[in-house]
Length: 233
Image (tube, rainbow, N blue to C red):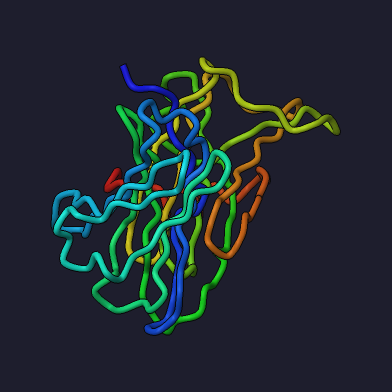
C-alpha cells in the first residue's frame, strides 16, 4: 500500500519565457531510502525521470538521460525538496511530480505564458438535478473567468454563526465537471439543505483562494448551467 502522499501545494505555476521557477515538495522525511525523485510529465507523454536528490547530504544525481537535464537543479531543505529552473523555455511546459519509494506528490503544472494570472469568479447555487428525486439536495459551485484554468475545490459547512467544519465522510458526494473557461463542482448532500447549515465552497487557484457560500434562489440559472454542463434535459 502507498504511504501518505507528499505535499505539492501549488496546483499551477505561470511563468514567462526567460523567467525562473521553483517547485516545492513537503513531507520528504517519509521517503524510505532518503532519495527524493523529480519527474516531468507532458500532457501526451509518460513520466520522465529528471533527477534524484539525497536528503541527508543534498547530493544531486542527474544521470537519467533526460534531454533537458542541464536546465534543472535541486535543493534539499529540512523535510522538503525543491526543483528549480533558472531559464524557463516553452518546452518546459509540463507537470512536475516529486516522489520517493511508493509515495508521490500530486504534481504542479508549469504554464509558460505571457498572460497574467487572474483569480476565478466563484458562485454557489442550489442546483436543480435528479438528486432531488432521491431525497437529496445538490449544490453547484461554479468557477469561471480565470487564468490559468486549473482550480481545486473543497467544501465545508457552517452552522449559523459557528466555525467552518469539514463535511462528514457520509454527508455528501462530490462531482466535478470541466469545460473550456469554467469548472463546476456539484455537492450531493444526503439531507435537505435548510437554514441550519450554510455550505461553503473554496476554490484553490494560483492567484489565491476564493470562497463563496450558498445563497437562496437562482434555481433557473443553475438549471441552465447544470443542463449545459451535463447534457441533462
